[in-house]
Structures are given as structure tokens and as C-alpha cells.
Length: 210
Image 1 (cartoon, rainbow, N blue to C red):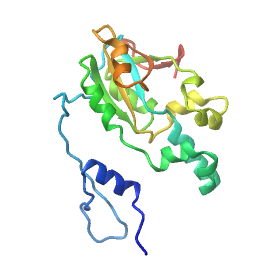
Image 2 (image 1 turned 120 degrees about the horizontal axis):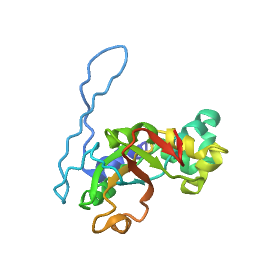
Image 3 (image 1 turned 180 degrees about the vertical axis):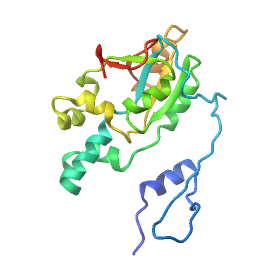
Image 4 (image 1 turned 90 degrees about the vertical axis):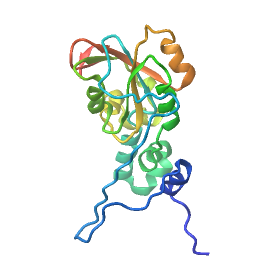
């Protein structure tokens, strides 16, 4: 009696073996948490960084695009009732899960050059992966979660590119290599090709500047 149900943070802490024990805390008018997480390369021994893409590399995303943004807007408009109406979107916003297994799998594919998570939205994070290069993206509404399509009506792709907090993974890889896209899909079937790295800077969506 009176025992609290474990939160998503509790469950993740147990699953990943990372105790949550506090941070740099001091007295003040507001509570501030300063959190640092340190790690090391996984079984592949590779530390795959951002800004390693090269022209003609294929870009892939692992995880939904824009789903957390759809959940946030639904919660702001409808409160907790939104959890029943938009279950996947609100769960993506309220309880995002780290894609650690997928990241380790990508690090084990030699053709993968660059890798990062999408926390600030694809439109903002993609340039960080690309470095001095640009990208030609090819995306249709069919590539998005049904709740994203339903929430954003006539412009789901554009809204999905702007949405943050999805914590999807974004990777660039040499598709002319031995395994190519088939190797990525074999390791992670849900990986989705979204375009190519270009020599010309900037982002283009379906042939138009974004």
C-alpha cells in the first residue's frame, strides 16, 4: 500500500544500469539539473560522429519523424484527453525511448560514416550531420506515421521535418559499399532512406528549397 509505480525514468535506469542519483544541486529560487552522461564505443569499437557525411551518401532515419511534435500539439490543445485520441503521438512526446540497440547496430556497419540522434527536429539536426554539404530529401506522407498525417493535414512532411524531441536516429552511409542499403536494412528493418547528401549546401525537399 502506498508504493509508487515505477516511472519511465525508473524503468530505463534499471534497464540500462544507469542510476539517477542527482546532479549539481544548490539552493535557489528554481531547481536546476546539470546532467552529464559519459560512455564508450560499443562492441564494434567505433565511435561514429556527426559531420562525417560525403556527397552521394544515402541518408536514413530510424524512428518516427514528427510524431512527438504531433503529440505535443495535441496535449496543448486537448490536455490529458489527447492520450486517448492520439495514443502513439502523445506517448512519443511523453515517454521517448533511446534507440541504443539500433545505434550500436549502425556503428557495426563499416559503410556508416555519420550518426546522431534527432532531438531538435530533422530540419535543424540534419545540417549538423552534413557539415559543409547539403541534402536532397525525397519524402511523401506515406513515409510518416498515420497520426502525423492525420494531425498535420495538408503539410505533414513539412511539419515532420520541423518537429523535435523524436529521438530518432539519423545516419549517412556510403551506399556504394559492399553492403549498401541492404546491409542497413538487414541490421535494422525499420530504417528508412530519406535522400542523398549533395555537394550543394542547403536542404531541398522533393526538388524544392526547404
